[in-house]
Amino acid sequence: AQTVTQSQPEMSVQEAETVTLSCTYDTSESDYYLFWYKQPPSRQMILVIRQEAYKQQNATENRFSVNFQKAAKSFSLKISDSQLGDAAMYFCAYRSADTGNQFYFGTGTSLTVIP
Amino acid sequence: DGGITQSPKYLFRKEGQNVTLSCEQNLNHDAMYWYRQDPGQGLRLIYYSQIVNDFQKGDIAEGYSVSREKKESFPLTVTSAQKNPTAFYLCASSGQGVWTEAFFGQGTRLTVV
Image (cartoon, rainbow over all chains, first blue to last red; front, side, top):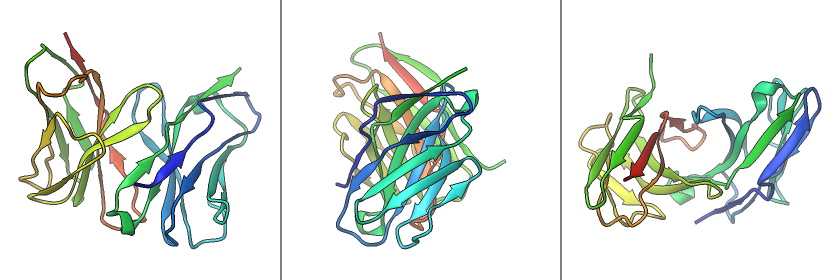
């Protein structure tokens, strides 16, 4: 099984500031996708952003962007201009065809936004 | 509206009883998944199915069973053999393409009383 590691169980950020959540993964495959999901207090999982391993350009979705370092097997999420609604658990996930299209999730980072 | 529906939202079970969690999707997705979520442990895969009438065990399948008789439905049974069933359960579905994301239901909170 693939391993996805989120080494920061908890993070906090001041409203309007920027925060970066870390994710590393272990794989020997060359083609795969990486995802960040948000789970607010309602517990509904929501896709934030995705990145294809073959694309060198980092994905961006409004205030959310990633720093994808393929050689280092690192996939961090940057949240700019943090808002109170960004407070949630964030999960990093990995998916590849070579592993039966399963999703492998990290253990999550709980983000607190301080007003 | 297309989506994935889990029911019930809260479920209470007496020790020694089997209980079935429902998961239905109308997204025409081939793949469906069941995850268990415990504090500090992320999402752990229980079972997944890539096609009707076929499913595979995930990392923590012991004490659980599933069926996939219809493309839209993937119910999970928590049996009395599951020693610690109290948890939050999430069902998800996705397209077969590796680029497609997982869509999740709202979850079922199971409590053994």
